[in-house]
Image (tube, rainbow, N blue to C red):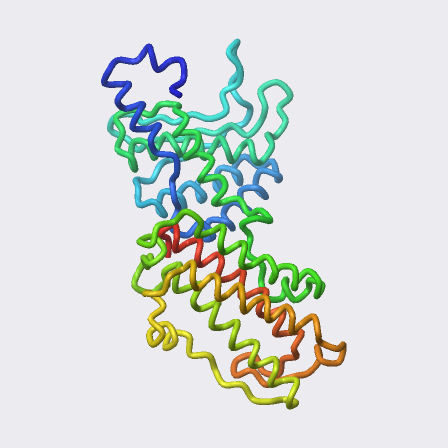
Length: 330
């Protein structure tokens, strides 16, 4: 539903408003590359140094504009916010004729002169960047505060702010988890994959984001086949100590088994069935079985417990890859 001021706009302005309202996301190609810049900005704001904060804000905004392929913008960070009867001014976007657009941000509250909360400051930064993107990315003749505008601002925020939900764990971080937590993650994996592809068309699931990265259905086929491979490997480890393992030829599998032509839902059902078999196998292991070892072609000597860590990490790594593929991101 349009905001109240929509009725006061001219017909041509209302048309621009509706175009803005229709666009609800601004997708970044590789948001993970901006996470360090966000961390730098948070540290700069905590230092209470205006110059350091301005430099960090400029780096982050330049990272955003470069990632989206739009015109760069000047940035300045000032001290206390301007204050009037209507409230405090948090940020300002200006596009004067004949010069590069300018984003102004204020880092302290108007009355108490306290440094603003980091997320508030970051939201203000993204809000002003949103106005710049309306002109440069969406090519709108004006930038209105529509519901779509605020959703685009939020989409940027959730892509570049590292949270427990979007921060992918390293292999060592997964290895530091308890065995019960690793197994619980493995048990959740089929449902997580199902949620990622639910409601997606076959065309989306079978489309590669570029010529180097797999489509979503290829990712699921890979997980299905790797699950079977890991079952074989762990059973071999129980039968013989330090058995040498052959390397995985995943690209050849994808080609020979025609992953791209596979149905994603069918592949997911097969993965779920094999994962249940793996969990049943692990539940039947004796304490000494977890320490049985093999020689991995890339990682060297690994115990059964290490393969469980690898599987848990492998799930998360490819779930993130699948999500990118569904969104059309490499």
